[in-house]
Image 1 (cartoon, rainbow, N blue to C red):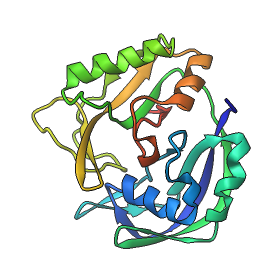
Image 2 (image 1 turned 90 degrees about the vertical axis):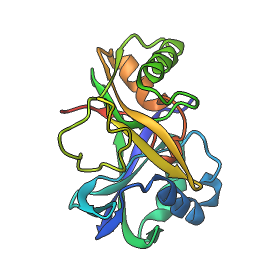
Image 3 (image 1 turned 180 degrees about the horizontal axis):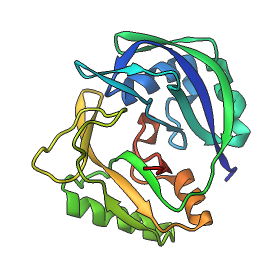
Length: 214
């Protein structure tokens, strides 16, 4: 498989839904229909500041970032200069920047969903089995609940759980998952995990890993 890269488009706008994975990809695939059923594609969650009413406010660095094979960069370039409707809000898409994936010993995904695994310990074991199938020996761990919402947090559920449990609404249904961290990765394992991800729904922002700088 061709190596993956991130194509990042700066965004201009004000508010978007905090839970924006599904409407964001719907807006993108309306402009580029061939992406609609693309399971290889990964779309990063858009970062912003919590603003109440289940919305986030875009910051200066907020961007639409799409992870895809390097030989398909041209496929998403038509997004530049367009206006995307994300739920009831709109954003303008700026010019693109291509960014190579960089290895890091610790990676983080704000939401990983694995079908059939809704409880923390069972989910964690399922995530570890997926890592084993990829021959990745890094240590997976659930992320504890923070005292305050993260800057790009969506809706949280399961307040009794000590772990950061999140949901994403897809086609009217709530899909449950957890924030996940993987430590002790070699450079090769780190790139592999960023390319492959864990779980499903990568098009909607799930299972997309980035270096954990926290």
